[in-house]
Amino acid sequence: MTQTNQSPPLSQAAQRFLSRKDFKHFINGKSTPALSGKTFATYDPSSGAVLARLAEGEAEDIDHAVSCARAAFEGSWSRWTPYERQALLYRIHDVIDRNFEELAHIETMDMGAPISRTANYKPFVLKVILFFASQCGSVAGETLPNGFTGTMTMSLKAPVGVVGGIIPWNGPLPSQWWVLGGVLAAGCTAVLKPSEEASLSILRTVELLHEAGLPEGVINVVSGYGGTAGAALARHAGVDRIAFTGSTATGRKVIEASTSNIKRLQLELGGKSPNIIFADADLDKAVPAAGMGVFGNSGQVCYAGTRVFVQRPILEEFYARLVAFTKTIRVGVGFDPGTQLGPLISARQLDRVMGYVKLGSEEGARLIHGGERLGGSLAAGYFVSPTIFAGVENGMRIAQEEIFGPVVSVIPFDTIEEAIGLGNQIEYGLGGAVWTRNISTALTVVNGIHTGVMWVNCYGVIDPLVGFGGTKMSGYGAKGGRAHLDAYLYTKTVYIDL
Ligand code: NAD
Image 1 (cartoon, rainbow, N blue to C red):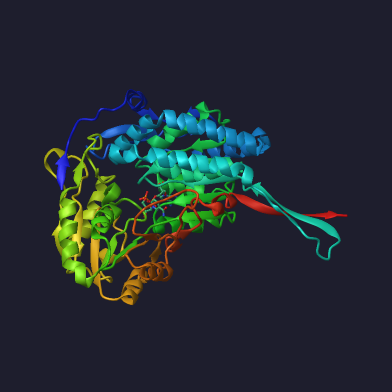
Image 2: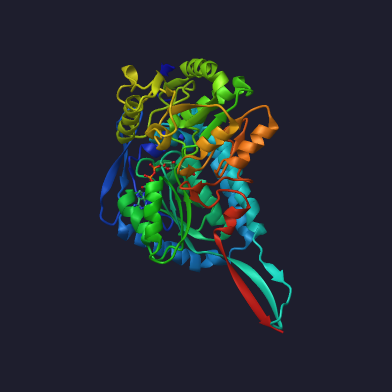
């Protein structure tokens, strides 16, 4: 691992945006201060310096935003045809395309991911927008054969109403699109609550949506803390559906809050994904993919392959190769184009990750690489070296709990049955992968592992046409694929007396 440190060549557009320093909510098409007048600081994780101040939303701001979203839902937006919404999504696509460099730079400043990563979100985000544009015209009910009622029967699909989108900090620039796309394609309206740690790319995106012709009140953004603004959104009786992405612990609170008015929920929660490498795997591909499958975004990825199971005959070779690969990873400030890993999001997350590193050694795992907070020119930021624990047992806490940092647990196995058994011994069920040249081994593992997504000889590929989702305590509800839009609609059956 090498360190990089270079001063940021921020684009002029991002500089202009960030120079505002004080950011308000975006409600009903307008920049709107918190009703209490309160603000809070957001930080640059590469330096720990205050980057900007944000309006601190509370229940009354959520209430205001929800009533604007409701008015928009009941108003002229409800008369937009699918073609009109599709055309809007195409205009949004073009505006986002033109302004992507600014958005990527804002994201890098706000949450620390290197520009090599945030700039690469562009093809993905644009595909997600195109995917949802393509869905607008595909909303259809059914005409059903007459049964015994003497009536003609059919079903219609209708938008569920006001959606609350609660977004985490680990990639708000792409993450918000799973909510925005569904809302706009279905004809719903929304109030987004970004993470208090990283709100800025969402606040800029909502401005761009309005430049593309989005009517006021359709998408609103309220910044603020989870326990106040987030909780108020989750329990608000005027919200029909919550799309939540975040930790399993918070997801549970969102479920409890949803009982206020029996909200529909989509929950994309935590993970501790198994990445299973058989002795016949192509290690030239498997080792870097396993490394970046957990270290990418400094480990702050829900489907990170944090439990790497390695078949015993190749164990020592795998350790040697993974350490050698990890030494080539460049950690540093986000604007150096050579940087592959940036800082963790916050001092709190840094403490949490370092706590797990200490715990791993105490539990008896062998630390064979990393495990330090980086100093020197990076000392002010929240940088951790990519960390490898060898000889981990699946029952150890470092192998069971979501660390959300660049820490991998390598766990040996002998047989395919053992790998499947160990892979499933976890409360989560988000992602997983298998590396082998044997198709039967690959498909036996795919069938045997209980997760919402499995990769074969690759890791982390996501296509919105197919999408992904979780099972077990990683949540429910698809992101992408045919099921996504359906979840923003409800079914109305109609009986017509003939
Ligand atoms: P978090 O649960 O702390 O916060 C997520 C969001 O919920 C934030 O906007 C936060 O302000 C809000 N929130 C906090 N308390 C709330 C409450 N009581 N009611 C309503 N909202 C509340 O998660 P995080 O630390 O921001 O993100 C990391 C977690 O997100 C990890 O567990 C990760 O696995 C998960 N994640 C999952 C996916 C996925 O698709 N499965 C994707 C990204 C992140």
